Image 1: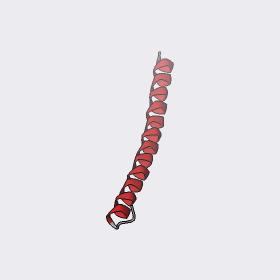
Image 2 (image 1 turned 90 degrees about the vertical axis):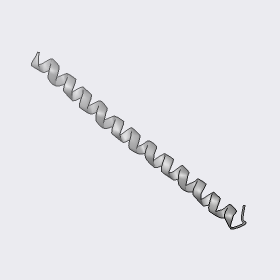
Image 3 (image 1 turned 120 degrees about the vertical axis):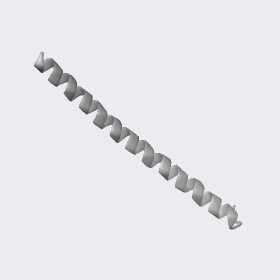
Amino acid sequence: MKRLISIAVLALLTMALSACNTMAGAGKDIQKAGQKVEQKAEDCRDGRC
């Protein structure tokens, strides 16, 4: 029984860590897209649209 609980806890920790990496990657992608939108807005404000 202890072995089953240990395996379950290890599996949950592994999934939690991989989810964190996925969310961090998504956050970086969203941030990069936001920077592109911001740059385009600045270009249009300066008349280079």
